[in-house]
Length: 72
Image (tube, rainbow, N blue to C red):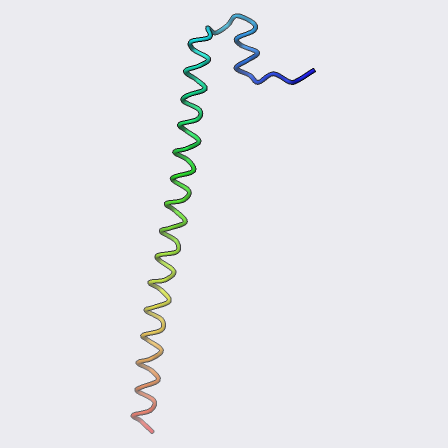
């Protein structure tokens, strides 16, 4: 016997209408999509900040290297 989801159990018990259950399904799907998009945006921001940090570190190292060469 297949396990029923909570919404299916509530519908079968008559505690919610099919219209309400359908609305909950649509809302749940939207929420999952929004969460996925938010995670993707956070990852993109992390990648961008890391690239900025790396470029700043590289430019700082280049300046130190040039300064050392001038001192020699």
